[in-house]
Image (cartoon, rainbow over all chains, first blue to last red; front, side):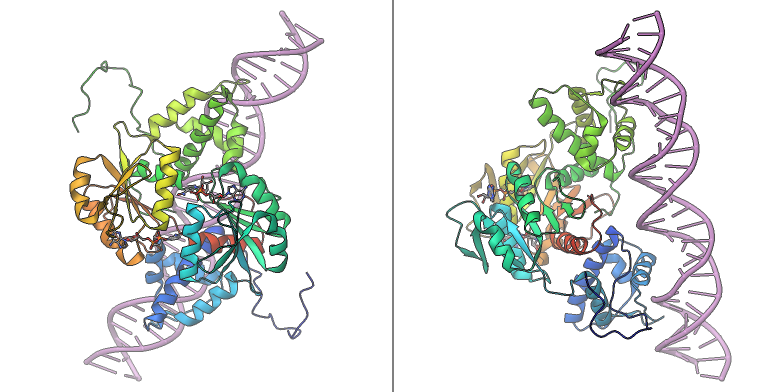
Length: 230
Length: 230
DNA sequence: TACCTTTCGTGAAGTCGTTCACAACGAAAG
DNA sequence: CTTTCGTTGTGAACGACTTCACGAAAGGTA
Ligand SMILES: NC(=O)c1ccc[n+]([C@@H]2O[C@H](COP(=O)([O-])OP(=O)(O)OC[C@H]3O[C@@H](n4cnc5c(N)ncnc54)[C@H](O)[C@@H]3O)[C@@H](O)[C@H]2O)c1
Ligand SMILES: NC(=O)c1ccc[n+]([C@@H]2O[C@H](COP(=O)([O-])OP(=O)(O)OC[C@H]3O[C@@H](n4cnc5c(N)ncnc54)[C@H](O)[C@@H]3O)[C@@H](O)[C@H]2O)c1
């Protein structure tokens, strides 16, 4: 990337860039923090304590303070953290500088659920296009999102800033879908199928395996229940 | 528990009990191992190497060997592990000694997807009953599972060996649903709503937060992609 | 102003899971 | 029978994240 241009002065350490290395788990927590912070702000709250954020993710106050220290956000003793500023700081880190969106492949039961959910809760990451092979789905608009034929995938993604793909097709089709998404420029995949996708090293894959999660719950329901998880 | 009865001799160390303390992550891997082992056995394979199992979960061969060592399953050099025996050993640990099942609460988009999925893939953990408040859903049988009214929850769970509950209702209703499930004897919850459920310490809760997962993917799609993950 | 309480910031210590490294072993080939 | 190759079992080293612990600072209160 070219990068440096625009309007930064010479010596000062800038403040926008994210030169920080953020652990995987911390990203999850930051995302959860932000979501609840927004609710709280909507309710009129303005300051938040570390133990409140900790309760959110099943963590300790110390962990929250450590997280916020890591992202360079500082509160003040006895007043806690300023909510809107913290939301902004987290967004600065998590959100892309330029608009980016998601493509959903596979508009079956699960795909429909996801479309419906994200159309309502409208996060920072809109689903810009959906794809399927079933003729009866192609061309329809579900929850505000157009469903295209798989043959149009490359063309559509060529016109949209899509960097993330959701794989919700039958397991046999998953690898092929992943390959095409990556070929079309996608750099991250949320994979719901019970297969490990083979992808180039620069592509990030997150597996959500509901069957495994359910077995895990069943197991710990029986044996010792270590309160928290995920 | 009464426990000891039936037919074990006096001194020998038994072999069925599961006195082992298993880390959370390992349970996930064991579940994934077993699923793929079954596929392989169905294809006629009989022996498996640690590196093959490792590839499944994005882990190293050493980790697999460590896992199997922990659960006390032993292979042999140059022949690897015996597949069916390993499946059996994992099942011995993961599955309940007595039949147990799952209750699904909230037959919306997501609930339907889950019902459909588990009715097909028929895991060791059947969904025995579904519940909802919407009149048009009550009494229907979807994917082989009867949908009951919420008012019937306690009664139905009184007659079924349900130890796990899936919470797929709107977020406002989640805590109330969790309370009732627990009251009715459920000991583990799979929670899809973006709230931290308050539960007694002996109940295990697993949160599946798709929105957070998606944000995580978006983040790592942009920054360094640490190939694997959970 | 002086004091007391609560919360933050952070170096240090602790915990837990993963990976390394190597000896032992089985099988197959020479 | 001996050699060679590949794989398992495992103690030990490693590394990463979490928690502890304590000093400092901000507000409230008398
Ligand atoms: N539903 C769940 O709760 C659940 C849970 C865990 C995993 N999964 C996995 O998620 C995936 C989807 O689940 P589902 O319940 O929505 O299944 P589904 O059968 O309802 O939907 C699959 C959709 O993908 C489409 N499709 C098929 N082949 C395609 C292709 N080559 N390209 C594009 N689209 C294609 C189909 O037309 C269909 O609309 C499956 O792999 C399933 O294993 C689902
Ligand atoms: N669909 C997704 O992809 C997705 C993703 C992340 C999280 N979630 C969460 O999962 C939950 C369900 O999502 P959904 O898309 O299925 O929503 P949905 O609105 O389609 O379904 C909710 C269902 O719950 C039923 N319900 C409402 N109140 C109830 C109550 N008190 N008791 C029992 N049933 C009740 C409704 O009748 C409906 O059938 C929501 O909390 C949502 O935030 C969904």
